Image 1 (cartoon, rainbow, N blue to C red):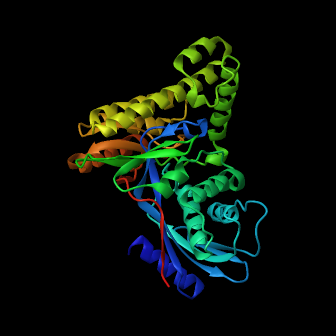
Image 2 (cartoon, rainbow, N blue to C red; image 1 turned 120 degrees about the vertical axis):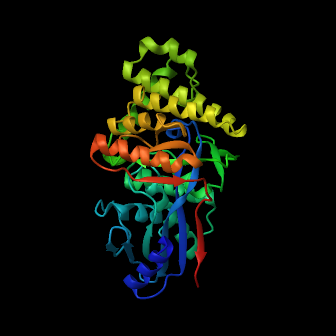
Image 3 (cartoon, one colour; image 1 turned 90 degrees about the vertical axis):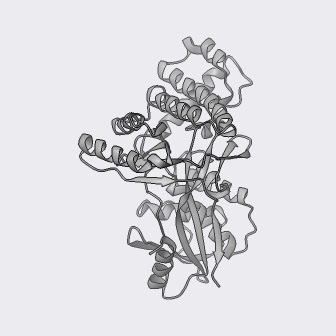
Length: 384
């Protein structure tokens, strides 16, 4: 059974009537530009062909009834919440998104899909985007896609409590099939870069180490970057974002920075340059250069930003031992989740078998593996 049919059936079984709307809200991969979004820098994400499907219908009593197909659990909210529920956690993403579009009314909602959870592919942003898009359509709010992105970004920051950047919501809402988004996260300007390599694809491999951004070191990294910006501004008062700093400025400021802060700044400055180089590689369809940049980013995330872990390092190392892989890195915030691997399509099956076998021997479990390609962003379809 397809994910969307399972979601439709779950809505009917749970609420006793058919939904009015069905939303497909994809996850995302990020080619380069990890941790640069909240530093005002560029990123290179894409929506992917794995998604959350959300079925919804409006209510007249202001109540929200929510059902999660994949968790086989639900909850009901009698009135607009003033604080996060925390349990179930998935409900906070839905409620936060509804709050940030103005809480226009109550809803019955069921959702499911084929998007990995806690894997670094932005399942939380996909859920927030889905709810915001459904409410926008059902209540005729007239919000633009960019306004919806800004609303779901606020939901994650304010209601859920994760100080993330805007990239995940933006990629999931604004994605385009067979293209990456070169997004300036400070100016919110973007350009679509076609992914024209028909014989190459992206393989995700899940380490099995789950991340919880609200309780991980993610917030600490953001604070360290903010501290680095403040210290650099002593030498360059006009510096508006850490992503604008230059290697020469960092070198001049090194003696004034704690070692850890220096490494965080060096990572961000280097990653900004790698995003620019990756965009050029995409324009010239240069997969070898792209693979090298993926490896350089993994090394910097491991050594300078210190967000990797033994399982992720092992997966990347094993990926690079396979002749079909041009490059690999941890993807997402780090601390667990997935690796992103650039692999020749005719080698994908052998590559996946190699990763599964080596990881099983080392860690005692077989890692899930998925093939993904850039796809269109979120969309809503009225059913009646």
